[in-house]
Image (cartoon, rainbow, N blue to C red; front, side, top):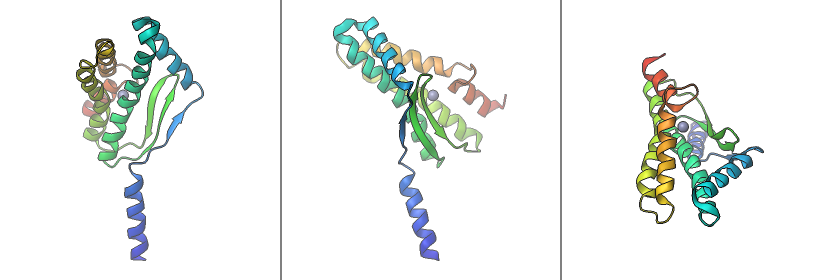
Length: 157
Ligand SMILES: [Zn+2]
């Protein structure tokens, strides 16, 4: 009986880092919008790589949330893309500061990407500006934003 419990605990610990990715049917519209933004920012020659890096930036933002959640032993059930944006589905930690840390991790990834993109030739500065905007806008305490989640977690309002 004890061996079974140990086995279950081991399997749960191994699966903690496995999160399925789901592309919602309208997620392709978001990808297309990112590519169009890329073309608008960099023309047809640079638009494709800018658009691809924009999608990657959105996913890495969510991966930041997911990684922090998993480090804090909060179950993450899905990472995905939909027309509304990239997202994760996860359990609530039940701990205020953990909730704030999980919410803060996404924008922090974007701010790290700002620094990294500054070293990328041709398109890096444009991607840095985009990531700065994504990180900053997400920290605004507006409904359903990371900033709102941080505010609510820390001050309960
Ligand atoms: Zn976020």
